[in-house]
Amino acid sequence: MDHPVAYWSGSALECEPMLYAAMHAYHTRAEAELPDDRRLLQPAESLGEHWDFEDDEEIRRRLPRTWARMT
Image (tube, rainbow, N blue to C red; front, side, top):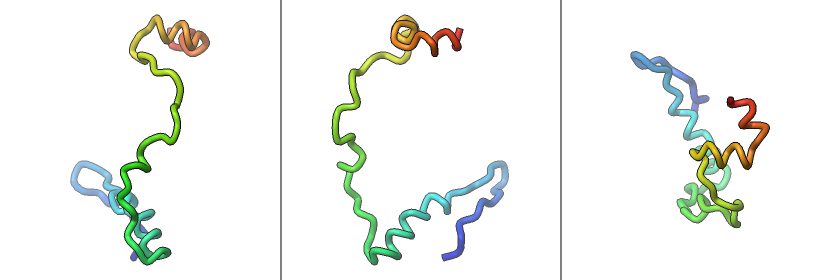
């Protein structure tokens, strides 16, 4: 396989071949297809408390230094 390269297609720079680099490397090294295991997409443990990132008051309370930079 050649190195993935970016190419111009009309109005956009396309880099789609680079998306397949890891899959190709796994296939070459393991001589098998990349497993399609949806469990790999789920976090193994809780990432903490959930809160509304769209709520300005909540952001101000939880992240005061970030809020100060935003305002």
